[in-house]
Image 1 (cartoon, one colour):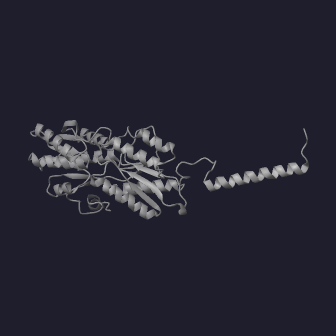
Image 2 (image 1 turned 180 degrees about the horizontal axis):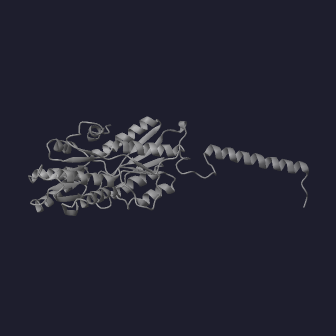
Image 3 (image 1 turned 90 degrees about the vertical axis):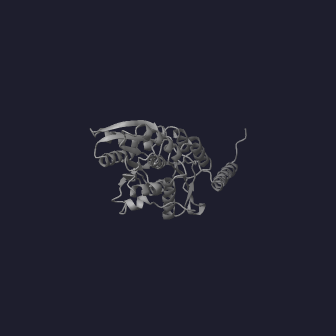
Length: 347
């Protein structure tokens, strides 16, 4: 075999170097990079590459609570700048399959991050794990997610404490004696399950209060709650002195049932989350108290937390947004006035 001359070897080395440099330049123009992606952070667009696209997914879209969450998310986007909120969720909170489909579509579309209020604590685990596998960070808000998928942070009311406060307020309104009904929401809703547990623990501490019913589910709509509450109130009408409903549609249906059965004002009623009819009911002494969350701050803090992470900053694993008891006496002062009549998102 002939040995290459020094000049030939030099020419070959120079050619190899040029080829390597050319390949590197081509890879740079293609946006390819052999370095591993850091979840969330490496997906952050530069200022000239467009806005951060943050998906905010509620349990449902038909209730006032979620419209306020939406308003808070949009306020955070305005505050941050260069952030676009992609708001989408199932129409009803019972549509778990629909919510899973929404999450999957956002994963496919390659959003920078997801803020999710899971309407079932177990059923959404796999799709959140799927988002994490695609390097899309997820903030859970309002209602918790079961173990099995990595999440960035949990932004929510302390729902157990909210249930405790509801139980104490109802006991006070009843003069610490009598019999109560707990109207549950739906199985798998972690936030309302915590409220139910807190309420029952608070009532258990009252020796002169009996629980008549605590295993009945009202469903996810006002109409379903009206039917179930009417059934229970008619069954226990000679015994019941207090009732607690754990969320807005549940409470709206219960108030209407109290009116239709002639028990409004006679049976002490505590609601969770406000509506126009519940506020009127409180003014008319048909509602003894309304447990309040801060859905505006929930939406705002969820987006702020996610973007903070995308910018490479540390975030808290749990962010509590507060819980309050509104009554006819305090409804005109802060923060009760603001939380009873929250800002709603408007196009």
